Each structure stands twice: as C-alpha cells, then as structure tokens.
Image 1 (tube, rainbow, N blue to C red):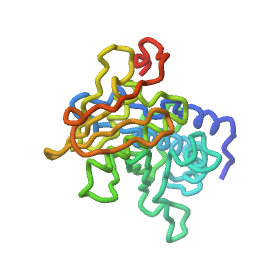
Image 2: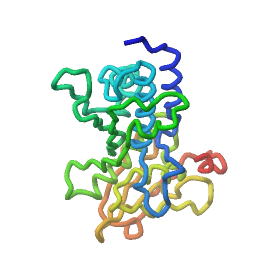
Image 3: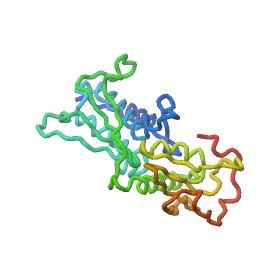
Image 4: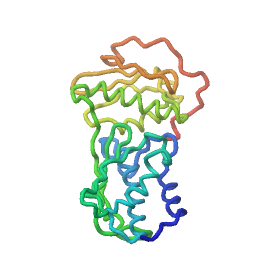
Length: 260
C-alpha cells in the first residue's frame, strides 16, 4: 500500500482541530427547538469520517481498511492526538477474520457523555473534489450515555459540570453564558436546562446556578467559583433555594458571551 505523505495527513488533522471552547455546534444542523440534532461527538465523527475517506482514497484501499482507520485515529485519540487527552474516545474497530477490513464498518466516537456512530462504506468514494464524498460514510446519533437510567437528572447535571470544568481547564470561563448555551446541546433530549440568567448583561450567568428539569422533577447545579472547582448538585429548582453569597470574578470583560 502506498505511503500517505505526512503533510497531507497533517493538513487533515489540522483542519479537524477544535479550538477552545471545545464544545462546538454545527450551525447548519443545530436547532433551537431540538438540541439533539447535532452533538460535538457527531461533529468530530464527521471530521474523522472525512479523514478516513481521504486516507483510503489516496492509498487505493477499501473504505473499511483497518490500517487507514488506525492511522487516522492517532490524530484523534491517544497520547499524540491533536485533541486534549481523553477528550475523544474511538472504539468498535474489529477484524475477526483478519482480512484487513473492519467487520461491520461501525465505529463509536464518544465525546463528553455522547456517542456518535460512524458507519464506513466498503467502496472508495472519498478524496479531494470527490462528488460522492458524502457516500463514503454516515454519522448518526448514538445517544447520551447513562450509568443509571433512574438518575437522569443527577447524571445530566454532573456531566454538564464535567464539561464546564473541562473547558475551564482550557481557559474558558465556566460562568460564560455563551459556553453554557453551547454545552446545552450536549444534554439528553428529555432534560431541559433553565435559570441561566444574565440580568446585568455582562455575558456571564448571574449566580452560577443552573436548573435541570425532566419528568416533573428538578435538580440545581451550583457551578464552582473557579474553572477547576467541582460543582454541587442539589435537588429542587433554583427558585426554591436560597442563592449562595458569592461573587463571580470581579473583572468580567464586556460582552463576553458574544464570541460563541
């Protein structure tokens, strides 16, 4: 199999890099009415599918080539990936009959608590300028991953807190309403997030408290004062709880939320 030039693979990997905040939404597919149309996992699965399609096209191999899948995966998952370690997890690669092709052509891409299913085609339809590149693979929503389906609200709030702190470690402000709005796209469809108010219009949540609603129940996430501090999840909505006496960092830049 011909060797793929490093400069080509590097260009593909660079094009796929997501810059802080890591939570990104596909504006062409995202909807204000249903925030499960597109997740970060699906976005990255699309980029991964593009890169695999290009790799197999240039190498002249089948679209399910395990060698191509592994080669491209290094740029997305692992110690040398272009994303922060642990951000992207790609599983599902199997070759039980040792024919050099993935058994079912389905890979699972996990980002945050969301899965995306990447289905690769057998034929080689990728490549620069290809008019049928969309046929090289297909991406579908794999759903929100719960450890316990009976704790939907608690796990959703805890997952949201982890996403905030992940972006906080990369330099984002965890109270930023723009970031909160983007991360809301990562929530399960049955969970609604409310009470993210910005009364003084400085671009940040007023009290750092978010309420999550589902099936007539509610929990409140009190965001940490710093990007690394773990938030606190309590039962009940914010409007039934006394707000904690604390002040967000003093020098908030104007219109901070406008950059998302």
